[in-house]
Image (tube, rainbow over all chains, first blue to last red; front, side, top):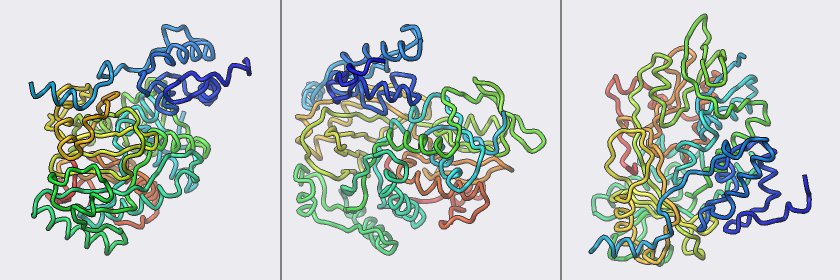
Amino acid sequence: MKGSDNDIIVCRCEDITLGEIREKIREGLTTTEELKRVLRVGMGPCRGKSCVPIIRRELSRMLSLPMADVLPPKDRPPVVMVKFKSILEGSEE
Amino acid sequence: MSFDVGVIGGGVIGCAIAYNLAKFGQKNVVVFERQYPGAGSTGRCGAGVRQQWGLEMNCRLARGSVKIFEQLSSELGVDIEFRQGGYLVLAHTEKQIEQFEKNVSLQNSLGIPSRIITVEEALEIVPYLNPESFIAATFCPTDGHANPLLTNYAYAKAAERLGVKVMKFTEVSGVERSNGVFKLTTSRGDFEVGCLVNAAGGYSKPVAAMVGVDIPTYSERHQILVTAPVPRMFDCMVISFTSGIYAQQVPQGSFVLGIAENEEPSYNTNSSWQFLEHITYEVTSILPVFGELSIVRQWAGLYNKTPDSQPILGEVSPGFFVAVGFSGHGFMIAPKTAEIMAKLILGIKPDIDISYLSLDRFEKGELIVEPSVVG
C-alpha cells in the first residue's frame, strides 16, 4: 500500500481522502453504499460523479473483486440539482 | 453455529439491543442483517429526536433516550453528531393549541422543558418562518437531531467490540423451533439461537410469520429529501402535525425534510415527483426562503406501522421478542427502548413500564391514543 497517495482528496464535495476510504475498507466496509453512509462520499452536489469510480477501483483492488462486482451506489432523483422555486413555478403552469 | 441470542435486523433498534445485551454481560449475541447496518429504515430516516409527546410513556421513552443521546458519542466512540437545537412545533388551529397546552403541562411534569410560544417568539428562533402560516407554537430546547447513519454504525461497531457478531449480507429465510431453540436458515448457512429478537423494521411481519406469530404491523413508504448545503440558517427542527412536514438543517449545512403522504401499505421505496411537488408547496408556505434552496437528492424508507401508531415491544411467544412497529418514531426512542428490551430479554425489570406496548393490546382493544404523531 502506497502511503503517499493517502492524502489525495477523492470526494471533493465532502473533503474525503483516499486514506479515509482505505481505513474504512480495512475496517470491514465492503460496498460503495456503506462507504457513502459512513463517510458521505458521493452524497454531495456532484452526486458521486468524480469519487465513485475511484472508490469502486479501490474496493476492487483491496478486496480482490472484479470491477463488475463492485456496484456504484443507487442513483436517486432528481438527475440534476433543482430549486424548490423551479418546481413551484413549473407546477403552477 | 449456535448463539444465545439472535437479533434479526441490523438497524438502530437491532444493533442497539445487541449492544445493550453485551453491555449487560450477555455473551454469544448475533445480529443477522440482510444488507448492512443502516441499509433499511434507520439510514433513511429524518433522525429528529423529540420529547414533545402527549402520552406519559412516550415522554419518558423520549426523555430517557435524550439522556442517552447526550453522552452516546463518547459511550460508543464515534461522533454521532447529536445536536440539541430544539423542536419547534407549529400550531395552526385553536384546537391544536388546546392539545399543546395539555401536552406541555404533562411534559413539564416529567422534566421536559417545553413551552408554548407566540408567533413573535417563534420568529426569534426561526426568522424565516412565514408569520401568516401559524398562530402559535411549542418549543423544547433540549430536543434535537443525530446522524442516523453514524448512530447505527456506532452501535454496530460498539456491539462488535463487546463481542457481538454482526453478520452483514445475511438474510434469514426460515425459522424452525425445536427442543427450545430456534433453528434459522440464512443465506450464509444455518444457525441455532436460544432466544430470538425481531427488529426487522419494515419487514417485521414476514419475520414474525416465520416464527408462526401474527403481528398487526404493515409498512408504508415515506419520502424525504436533502438540499445542497447552505450557511447556518437555524438550529431547530420545524414540524407541523397539520401538513406532517418536518425540516432540519444538519451540521454539514444541508436541510433534510420530509412530509406525511397518503400511502397504501407496501414495501415500495421508490421516489416520486408527486412528493417533490407536495413538499415544495408545503415547505415554501411555512418557510418561503426555501424557494432558493436546491434539492440534491430524494429517497424513501418504510414506516413500520401498527393500528395505533405505537410500537409493539416484548416477548410474544416463549423466547421470541419483538421490537417492531415504531411507526416513524423509532430512531428517536431507540437508545432507551433498546436498553429496556435488553433488560426484558435478560429478565431484569426495566425502569419504564412498557406493558402498554404489548402485542395483546390489540386483541383486548386497548389501543394507545397518542395525539402527537407525524404521518
